[in-house]
Image (cartoon, rainbow, N blue to C red; front, top):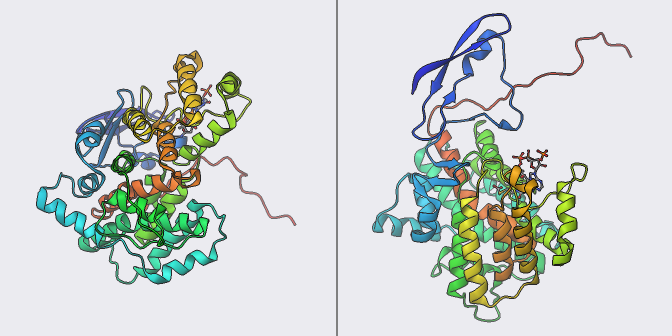
Length: 423
Ligand code: CMC
């Protein structure tokens, strides 16, 4: 991989050769792993310039607004594929043929039920517990059911763990919702698609027949697909770091869910809707724009900006088109939509946002669609977690199937120097 070296002159005058690694696409990477021998660490808070791993799964070019899964663009997948096929692609590295797809869909469908004992866990949660809190607990609890039977060094065991996770996440997500509204849990229905089954478990009741609208089913599938993976983001890196200790994969995914919850990451979709409610009407937008620009005010425009995308978020483009389709199809007239559209317009024409390359991200539009479908705001990040599970577990698998080291960052210590104990 290394073809040339970079050289670094240290304050001591020593010159260190650092191999430059070439990827298949995108920027070259300077391998600094040998620097410790010269007595130095590198320093990069927030991993602004640091590649934490080698990976073949997802590629992002933030300047050009490119997102590729295994070489296929997100626009292409959103147009021509579906969520489960994209899950297959992320895990196995290639698109399935017809037979492979059928087998994969069947495998996922046959793993959708959770152990009956797991249902009792929910009794321990107050009805108004945040669904993300319940998800962290419920997914972590899955490890209790599949710990002794799971050998993380076995390819087949890792594959079964992935099937179980992708299959059971919608069931657990819907259980969180049902618990919060005091309705009975709905068992999964194997005759429905992944998206339709999720909607059925969310909105169906034992009292009457529930039919899923094809437009809503398609929109739900697309939301799952658009969130399936996103390279080494905070939650994926958390899953990799947890996995590097050899921990149980279900526990690692629970750690990923915790990382996703924050409003700077997956929690932004919930935060967008709360912000739109807070803004209330179009006349109030200028005041909120001023707040967002004020360096002394912690308020940020939720759904704007991205660590990597500095031109546009390609997922946001597809999501916006989807949101237009769904709203027209459902005939939804949500006043928050007017606020969202005007906010977008003003922010995009304001130099503050242009100079900092702050554009609407995927979460700006996903909340609007989810809300139109009737999903409560507190469930938005849970849906992100359901979608991202395949990305998390595919990265965990990629790491676990080759030699790896425990993740152990170092630090720039600025605390006390040695001093004698004085009581
Ligand atoms: N509203 C107002 N100002 C902002 C915003 C915003 N949403 N985002 C960044 N800025 C400003 C920030 O204050 C800073 O200004 P200055 O240079 O004057 O100090 C500048 O833009 C650079 O921002 P940063 O915080 O250094 O950028 P970052 O790469 O560390 O953070 C981010 C990226 C996504 C955490 C941040 O843009 C943000 O908090 N956005 C709102 C939350 C959000 O929508 N998150 C979802 C991300 S997409 C889904 C996902 O992948 O999880």
